[in-house]
Length: 145
Image 1 (cartoon, rainbow, N blue to C red):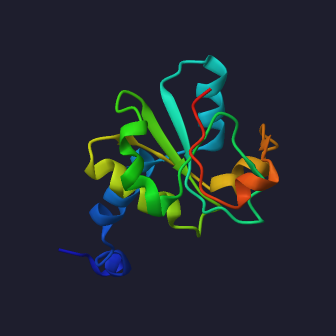
Image 2: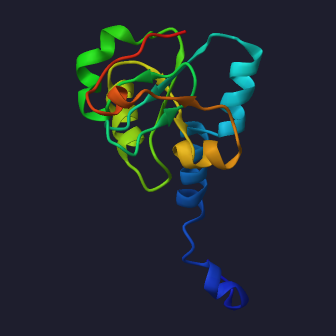
């Protein structure tokens, strides 16, 4: 029962919010977390750029596979199930990485989405791999380095 002095907190869904933040922490990895894994050269991570080819796509995170979200189901055999898969797209309001993460999770992959996408990566001045102009025109899967 709520006391009168705590009336405003009586309807607060504490457990729902707690569960949300636990899920969010489990579902995302920060750009600095990815950079730290790459710097340790653990080879336990696969970055997947799930953005669609376009003239705006001029760079990606070095070593990333390029698999547009809408085609990821057809490329599952090219992605290792032994590694942490980190899909990324443009920014926090882009849902392509989330869409790809769902597909990967449904097929038994370990997945964490890059929080903030390439916008967050770039704002931290982390390494970028410039793309050739023809890479922006047609979907192409790039090999792991």
